[in-house]
Amino acid sequence: MFQHRTIQIVLDFDGTITAKDTIEPLVQSAIAHIHPSLSPSELSQTPQAEAWSNCKSQYLADLSAHYEKENQEPSDGVAVTGLRKLEREQRSLDALKDVEWASVERVGESGVFKGVSREAFLEMGRAAATAGDPQGGKDRAVVVREDFPEFVRWIWQHNLQWGVVSVNWSWRWVRGVLNAALPELRSYHVMSIKANDADGTKGTIIGYPLHMLNKKRTHILTTADKLFAQKVTLFDFDSGFSSPPLLTVYIGDSPTDLSPLLHADIGIIMNSASSTSGALGVLIDKCGYRVLPVSEYKKLYCKGENEKVAILLSVNNFKEIIDSGMLQDEEWDPTAAKEAWKKAESED
Picture 1 (cartoon, rainbow, N blue to C red):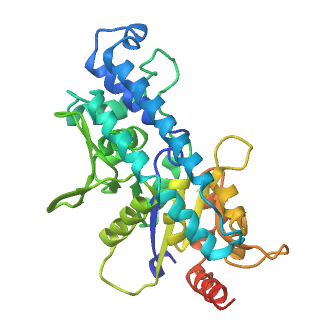
Picture 2 (cartoon, rainbow, N blue to C red; picture 1 turned 90 degrees about the vertical axis):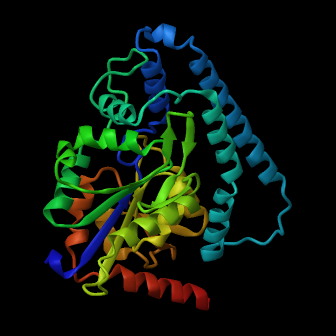
Picture 3 (spheres, rainbow, N blue to C red; picture 1 turned 45 degrees about the vertical axis):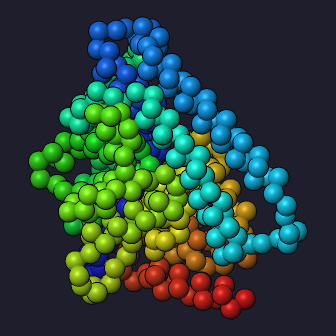
């Protein structure tokens, strides 16, 4: 059955493949690598640790100032919902580019990554997903969702294409974590990772190359950047054939995933462990739409009893995607359903 439809799956990394964001473990691993002989308590007193603390404080201050300014901007008083509201929310998220860029530059100047080799980033990622926290904790510094390896092996079994898009600062760190979770990756499985690159020579955070033959790099910082990286990934997947029909899937957990989620034929929100509604779910509701559990996938892009169209799906784990039967259901055509929804919206 699967040979009848080509399926391309792109996943976010932090908070989607992993249980939590991994930027803090990445930085702490780098500081521990620079000072291998120091104890956890001594590591917290290093110049790099102090600089990192200042970076975080300044980032939060910039973020607060950004939203305060945004909230003070005059409103035209007209309530907007639907596609126009979604577009407005995406522009609002893209406006964080300056805040994120300033943060990247500060981290580069802080020296937290200076002296860390390319190979070390890979090893740090692997160690973080298998060993204890560099700050002295007994638990693993990075926890990969327990059913993620099963999901990837299911992807391999059915010859689907998959890749990762992330705002993480080191694609090698991401690769190291994935190598630990999926030892098979080291030997014969090829996958695409689009994420930033930390240059240990200068300590700066550089973007990812647009193409292996192109030295030009671009940073992934916002939802628009992720969308662009998603499109590049899908282009890399492209076999050049228009048939069999192509189905694109994106799985993410945070507002930076909004544009890629909306671009895919099927956008899936990975819920956090908490019982509270995530930021993405709240945002979608504010725009006048709803999110459905993946088990109700056939209602995607259809109006419910409350007249809200469901435009995204949600899961609590990767196993729910497999168990739903959605990707095996070749009689269901989400691409046509999405086109019909957009056409109906544009005519209203």
